[in-house]
Image 1: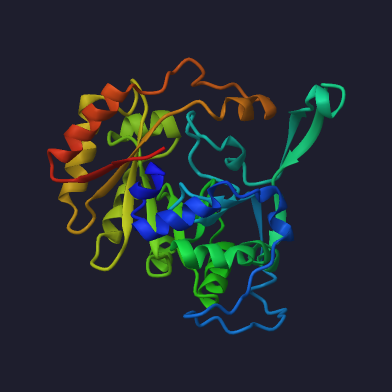
Image 2 (image 1 turned 30 degrees about the vertical axis):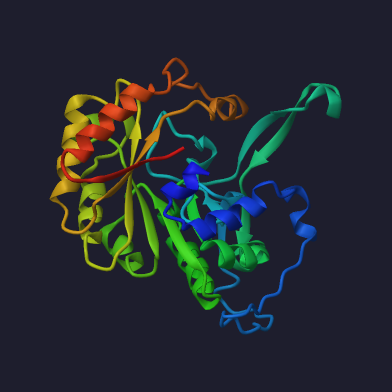
Length: 319
């Protein structure tokens, strides 16, 4: 439950999350919940075929009962396509904007133990996605949760994302955007006041190093983060700690100095690199360039934390 505390959930909300922590989500589709809850202004919405509901986009997953993607219990929608090509990406199936071929190993107990072809990603419309999101409104309300849009990079599909956000607002749902920040300034600015919480990734401060590892410059990312630095905006900067790449003294000091220079954004979540995506690279028939890179030690994480805190920055350590 430490991750919940890091996300700023109150003790009462923690107890709510605890009640559902062991819930058998495999049967969640069979559960039904009231749409008009006490204390909530959720008027029943008629079936609609409006243009926004028919907007289409490409996703690769919808994760229900998520507790690491913002406050409370959430549904995370993963949109496909990302302008960055980070070798450490934990969702490599989200980089390509189109559905793509992959393989899946069938466990012996389920069949022959052989591999079978599958497709990662599918085209959906807003109505279908909202149908999944709205199944868990009760959990959002009781835990202070909501909906998170992740990827990939959600801003790579701006029209689809905007339509989803508008529908979430119609249902009075808390929204969170997990973003790398790489989007045209006019696109980014158009979403600045439509999101309740930004989870904003910060990786490498040296532009040459950023281009080397991600394939793009970091200037647009830094400029968009500066543009978010206004009173009333809720932003958590997420700094990924990767041994030998982002955890160097120079990079950590530069990142801490940059965040310290901002007027209102002082919350940073340190995310330790891990290897949970190794199997995904195999399924996509891609080389895992980070295969030999170990997760950071606890000592290394505390060292990074100390450098940020020395600049007066509030730190949490994520999962």
